[in-house]
Image (tube, rainbow, N blue to C red; front, side):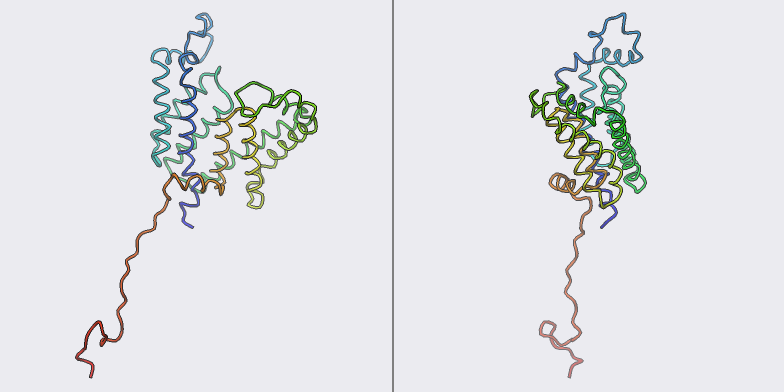
Amino acid sequence: MSKSNNYQGLQLFPRGLGLLLSLAMIRLWPDLELLYSSYLMPDELLPQYSEKWIIMLFDWASPRLYAGLYIGSGLLLAVIRQNCAPAMLLFVLHYLFFVGYSPWSYGADYIGQTALFFSIFICIWGPSHYLQRFFRLQLIAFYFFAGLGKALGITWWNGEAVWKALQQPVMPAAFTVPLSAHRYEYLWVGLGILTIIIELGYPLTWTRRFRLFFTNSIILMHIGIALTMGLIHFSCLMIWYNLCAWDHPLLHRIAKPVIKPLETTEPTLQVRTATADLDTREGGKSRHVK
């Protein structure tokens, strides 16, 4: 196996990330003028925000202008291989929209900012063994401390956290859980404990023996989050993170139809080998043969 194939996940990560971020901004496009404007904030409260320069920046030019640059940068990152310019521009714009402006910041936004940080290094220096290890370690730390925080409380052990998460009207969900399902207490307790086990055990993905089990478990967990809670962007972002970090077999099935192979096979020249006998039917008679 070639060296490029060993880091195929890292090479594909910025491209999928750019596409996911562009799609997320396209979903926000109809409401940009309402979300990023000082019209929703009284003048007496505006000076109290340290991010007022961001609000003034959006008021100076239409938020749609910055959003258009955001979408364009994401699409360029998706189609152009190892070009750091779209990644850097998208890093700055993502901060302006989702991280620097704290009223609209969520966990997925900080994950996206970290992902863009790694994408810049991948595009500048290319994939490497040390970058891959660091990429995997930060993902392990993310899940481990998320599981540790859940384990230290009581709500994930008694199922309360799972039930509340399913009932919060955050985003439209594909499957809604009816209120009458609260009587299935053991189901919510089991899901809470299972979530803690998966996240605390995620560091075992470092070993090949448990890698496929925990990555598949995490992917299924995020699919469930997307379907029942409507957090599609967050779930897709974390699924792509896991696929690329561990070179999951599913990654190659997704990438093969839409992305050219990372290495090409050079054509070989077919040449007829010369025969040792000089007196052949194709070669004619030789004067050296009696």
